[in-house]
Image (cartoon, rainbow, N blue to C red; front, side, top):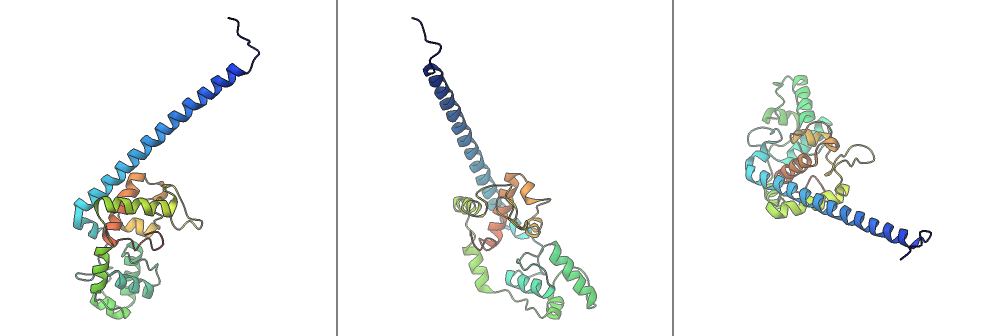
Length: 215
């Protein structure tokens, strides 16, 4: 049987078959990557749940018995730093400056004397404690919450950066929160597993309050 080599029909059939094979391989790769990402996120969430109280120690406390994020925000507003409720390095440095300027022990800890000098109440709010425990899911619920937040904040892109450059990575951390939770460098450059781990720790510590729009 002679084949008409000038006919485009066999070539088109071969091209379609090749394209179908490539598309099938691409779908398999995407499914495999999604599976690995889901496993990594689940491991991060369960690791944080097992760590328990360790997540509570990620940010430096104000002082013994003073853990209210409302108190931290009020303190930050008085000091003129970003009022995100996380007692991180910038807040500690601002507290030290204030303490030195007012003749207090410059240890960076916002104890009763420092808070009184700032005019900030140290009393934590019982309602906030209740709300934060209710707002901090665990296990499968935490994994689902983090996936929803990531999709809303960045479309799940670990390298995403907001238009003004302030919020970075899969969960759109700002740099101060990222460092306060134990991260280093640029969140958008960190491995996705590291971003998942820190987001899980932040969720366990503060519930969905760090993501007021997407939480």
